Image (cartoon, rainbow over all chains, first blue to last red):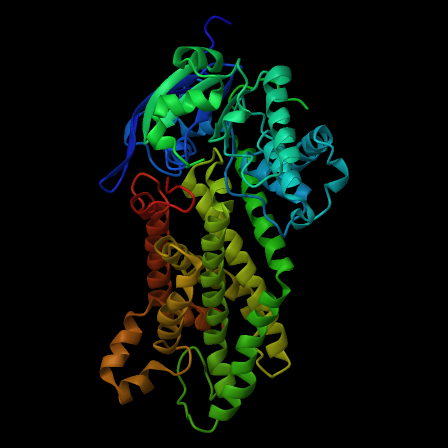
Length: 251
Length: 281
């Protein structure tokens, strides 16, 4: 296991929208089997980073590797190891839950029989087995999120990246989603990159990467960052890391 | 839940087929779920056929022009144009669904597939084309009772023409969809693309008639790829090949497709320059 490459390796990534720089020389990695929180305010560059990781935008500066596979040079191999949950919903509301899964499976070259087997397993794991034939439209917000997360696992990726997956959910649903993702790390050894601006989603043992205005401000274990800043809690630590003025009232 | 480690899957030929099948299947499902889309796709040309053509029948006189070997009714003349119109609307509508997909994030799911992007977009094009071919045959079935009865083998020989025209118009729609950032802008494209393309073509009147009226418009019609799509269908419906129409339609299909694939390529395409929804921060 000593040779295991990091699940995700971001090195020297910069990105511009016209003249505006959204990411400035960002480098960090997500260790294999880690739950890594990408912490930043809205506008910090998290979604830009996700767009680069998911190849919506081309990488112009720097390199991104998924389990050692370079995203620019070998996109097929990198993407097949990557599961993604976007901030905005990407399920087709008009189709049933199972149909959404079959479509996703087909996009990864997985045939119907195997897709049906995996779909049943995954839905059962999030207690939604009885909703397989329902239209997605009929699900609650929290259920849709759970469905999206397990759908992202359909092709058995080793790295799951989630962009603000708890946005718009109530407290109960948020806790469920977080538990689901942490369970994947603990039980299945899936590595997770969890982007959020909510510090209460962080556990002391998590790896944390703090992004602010397109720059990497800090990285390390949550507990270490808190100690280093001498803050009472993670929220205070975050404020200290990005500067109190910057954080004022924004979250 | 099992997520055991798996080596990067080799994308076999079978996997490509599974993917293509999945994309077509989804497009078919979406079409079935939008019954009003099917109905309006059918009603539109039928209104032209039943009302417009009946009204115009006496106004326009025709000499015998290929591929027809006798005098024909106006209804018979405009049928290929209406078939192409169905495909034109469908091509634009699938691109509308691409804009919708992009806004809703479905496009992101498509682009996360490990298959090459050109293949994925091509799959979407094929899916849209098949849907449009179904619509055309449904129209032909109804038109048969209206005495639009091309030779039986024509129903078969027109199929390749419909596939090519569907690809060309679908690719054009796809290219346009990359230029449209938001759904609301799309009605403009409908007005500025569909109507000019349809009216400045041989769909409703033979070009020699246009030439009599306005030589300038005649050249516009000649340069309009839609004219050639209509003529390709017209000849194929009578078991003949219009080589010029075939060449122009084929070339346009290729150019539009290449353009669409470039436009959706993140490193070169317009999406990268303009940014995409949900990625503004």
